[in-house]
Image 1 (cartoon, rainbow, N blue to C red):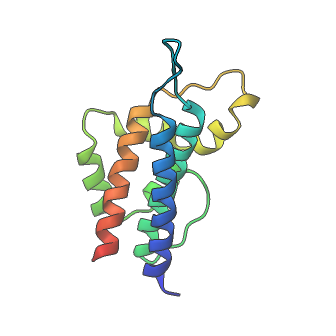
Image 2 (cartoon, rainbow, N blue to C red; image 1 turned 90 degrees about the vertical axis):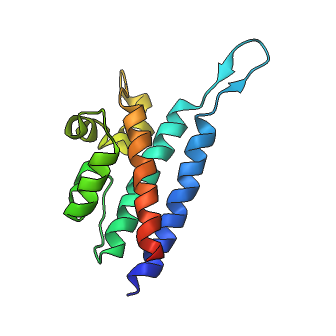
Length: 142
């Protein structure tokens, strides 16, 4: 199996979901003084992009992973990458934030089934996804 080719495909899909997330989270004027933001699709797409960037990074290192748990996938990364990412995302209680966003993709896809769905770590999710996007691109170019 050519891990690098598969990792590139995963990375390309992640880029598409990341772009969809950015567009969903843009504020669009409604013309009546209010703005529209597609929060739920934006968060779901960002969480899925995050998952795919993780899977791309893991694939570059010869690992195949399944599942949607961001925390579980993150823990499988090489220690050097984990350390770099934690250092890049300063100002957050990393472990706490990682735990809180871990199941965002699943939880937010079905948020209508819950009484309340709250993401208080949206900025952390965005920063983590951006960092993983960069690390994945770097590893694929080596």
